[in-house]
Amino acid sequence: MSSRRTPGRGRRAAGRCGVLLAAGLLALGGCEWLLSLDRTAPTCTIRSPVDSSTVSGTVVIRADAVDSVGVSRIDFYADGGLLGTDSSASAAMNWATDSLADESWHVIYCVAHDLAGNAGYSEPLDVRVARPDQRSVFHGAIGLQNGSYFSAGFVARAGDSLLGDARVASNGVISRFLWLDRANFGLYRQQQAFSALHEQTNVNALGLVLPVAQADSFYIVFENTTGYPQTYWARFGLE
Image (tube, rainbow, N blue to C red; front, side, top):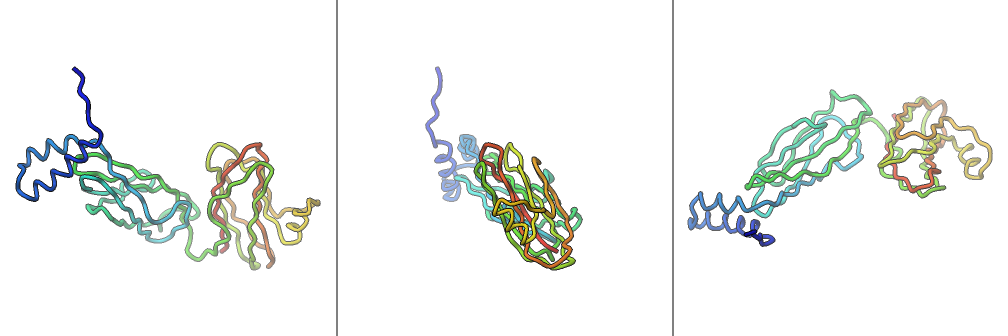
């Protein structure tokens, strides 16, 4: 004869377990039996830093976990390696990034464990390590329909360097990336012949360190001519 499990039964039973234990009305063995009915993993969410952000020095990773029974601990990971464990449901962990390569990307996530032994994984977040003296040009997601472009303008001084990373969020390519000065951006917008300071086409990702020869207003441009909508993650700064 097949057995049928009532939805939510394990969660309700485990919740009652804690109440009955506190009241002294249930032995530990009974509690373990009730906990064994719980099959629902806790949720774990990283609150900071945010996805695609730039970090430096000692980074404080903050996370929250929620479970119907109770959270026993949160494990913190960076690039697949365990950073440490905190036994509270709202936790923080220090991550030292000084030894990591400048402009490198890294993946962080957390894993929450509940009293019944279930584990819940957070969404992985990508963060970039960079020196704190950088001035931001643009960072975030860029969503482009086919045949459209995105531009971000900034002012740079002679002797600055433009540092940038960009990658495709899913399958696809960056059809065209341009770095233009003010005059050539005007020509680009008018669909006239122009000269780019830097150009790359049909790449999945790019990484740039480009010197600024003279002070001016500049623009970075992303084009999508793939025939499909595309989303890019990009981070550009000056130093």
